[in-house]
Amino acid sequence: MYDMKKTLFFLLIMISLENFSQEEQEGVPFAEYSGWDLEALLTTQFSKQPSNSTVIPFYGMGIYPRYNYSLVDYFSVGFGTPINGGIDASSSSYGSYFKFFTDIPLEVTLNFGSKATKKADYLFGTFFGGGLDYNYSVFSDSYGYRASIHSFGPLLSAGIRYKYFGRPLGIRISYMSGVINNIKEDPSITYYNGTTPKILTLSLAYGVQ
Image (cartoon, rainbow, N blue to C red; front, side, top):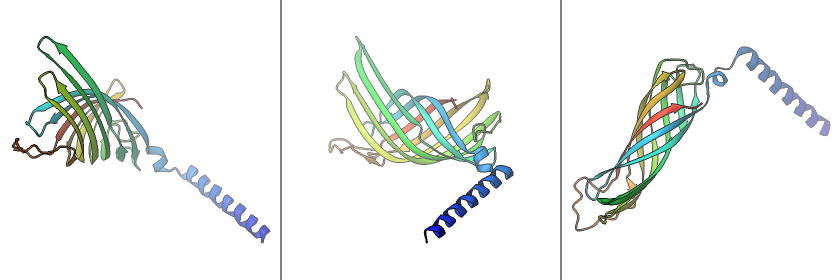
């Protein structure tokens, strides 16, 4: 019985090695075009406050790791998380403020042209995507206004890429609706646009890998 198990074990190993050898000889498009991609981000985020419809800008930086799955060089399905964060403070004779934000989406994108795959060598490219996003922002000023908002909800994104001096530059835009949030309604305030935070994110992306 032991000899039979040993024989079957070696037989399975030989079959696996043979299949691997055939794939190496025939070429595997998945292995050739799929792989990890990394972009550095400079980001401006506009957060609309439900309490007074004020739009507060936040500034930060981020990274965008993404795995591209593809069988051709000009198109891929990407799975990534463009993480952003930033802190900003100022004080003068006119007043002071403090701002902080972090943004952690999970998205699936359809990528075309430049930066779509690790073999893509095109001048232009574009992408469209969607997913889910978690956002946390804090704002306070010397006039007594303070907001600390957690929000989670659906995300839509799109962008373009352009090959500049051999490296892809791009612009990414996303829109998030924080349908799940920690906002408590104040009976004295009329929420004309509802209590859902709406967040627009603009990023300049530079291809690192």
